[in-house]
Amino acid sequence: MTETMHTFENGVDLAAALSAAVASKLAAAIADKGMASLAVSGGSTPKAFFRALSSAPIDWEKVTITLVDERFVPEDNPRSNHLLVKENLLKGPAASARFIPLYQKVETAEEAADIVTNKVSAASLPFDVVVLGMGTDGHTASFFPGGDTLEKALDKATPAGVMAIHAEGAGEARLTFTFSSLENAGLLVLHIEGEAKKDVLNKALSGDDEAEMPIRAVLTRASSPVEIYWAP
Image (cartoon, rainbow, N blue to C red):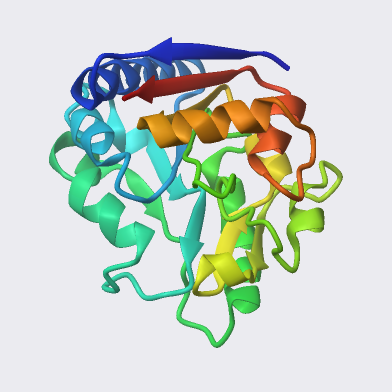
């Protein structure tokens, strides 16, 4: 596996470049097979990228968007990644895209994971584009250090789909696509900003313990090259 570092002067420049790269990949997928799929991450980092991408002139009706991971909370919860995407990406031209939420109105995250996994085939796996983030603890998606199902989630032999994971550092129960669902995307991006995140990235690149820093699984074992987008 190889990774390429794309460095920008600021988050605005990064958002413009990343949105252009993602839109180009989605447009190419639509031209090639009549549809495209995109999995994105939550958090505050991707907001500017989402807003830039939402106005891209592509055939959004042929794009399926979902989340790399989600907290097991309803859409109207302030901590919901669905809410973040709805407010920043699913607007303007991109409002006509099909969105597959991970949260489901059931009792447990495990039940929701089973339901969503059965819906994901319509999202044209493998994903055309996956945009990952990274926490200061080295987690990506909801692959949290100490997660109760982390080993299974990171196992390449675990089928593509959605799993539940519980971890002390995660707060709520989480829903996450498995590593096998994400590692072979047509365009695999790690989007990080700030000096602290760059330090975490450098630490991850200098070691190999995936249980300590699960982002290492993506950096070292992904089938697709990892395109790292960073700005101070």
